[in-house]
Image: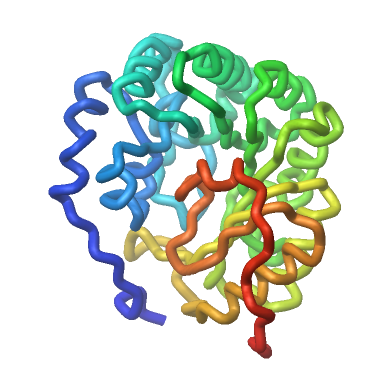
Length: 290
C-alpha cells in the first residue's frame, strides 16, 4: 500500500512561528523528531509536545523515526528552557514525552517527576500530561512519576500483540501493565494510550487490544493511521477507512473509555487538551463490516 494515497499538506511557513523559539532555547519536540503530519497545524497555533531526555532512543521500533543508538549523558539543564517555552507559548495544557532510556537506572522517571512538578507550578498552566516509556515495567519508576501528580499519565500501546516484534525491546504485556499499575497507584489520575493501525493487524486483534486497555483502566485512547516515516521503516499494509476508525471508536466507548479520538491523522498528543474535557459519545453507530 502506498503512503502517497494519504496526503496532508504541511505548510513549512506555519512551522516558522515557533521553531526559532524552540531552537533558541535548545528544546526538541516529538513533533519534529517523529515527523508528525500535524506539525504545521500545531506549530501554527503555538502548540508543541516537548521531548525531554534527548533525541536518541535505546530501543529499535521499526515504525518510529526517532534516532536509535547510545544517548549522551542526560542532565536537567533543559528544565529552565522548557518552563520558559511554556510561558512564552502561553500553554495551558503541556505534554512532555521522551525516547526510551534503558541506559538510565530508573528509565528517566526522576526527570519526568521534576518536569511535571515544576510545570504544574507555572501560572497559566491548567494541566500537564506525561507520555512515558515503559520503564522496563518498574513499579518504582511509575510510582515516581505519579508522585508529581500529572493530570494525564500516558503510555502508548502502539500495536496489537501479534505485531509487537516491530517494537524491538518492548513487550505487549508490559505496556498494558504500565497503565494498569499507574491506575492502581493513583486511581484519580487519568491514563491514556494510543494505537496506530495499518501494520497488518486484524479486526479481532484491534478489538482485543482495546479490551485489554479497558481492563487496565485506561481512560483515554487515540487511534490513528500508521504512516511510514522512511523507506526502510516498517511497511504500510493497509489504509484504514474512516468508517473503520469510527467502528473502533464506538467499541472503545462501549467498553467504558471516557474519551476516544480516531482518524487518519490522530496521534496521542494531537489536540491533547481536548481529552481533559470528558466527552459524550456523539458518533453515529458504525455500519463498517470486516
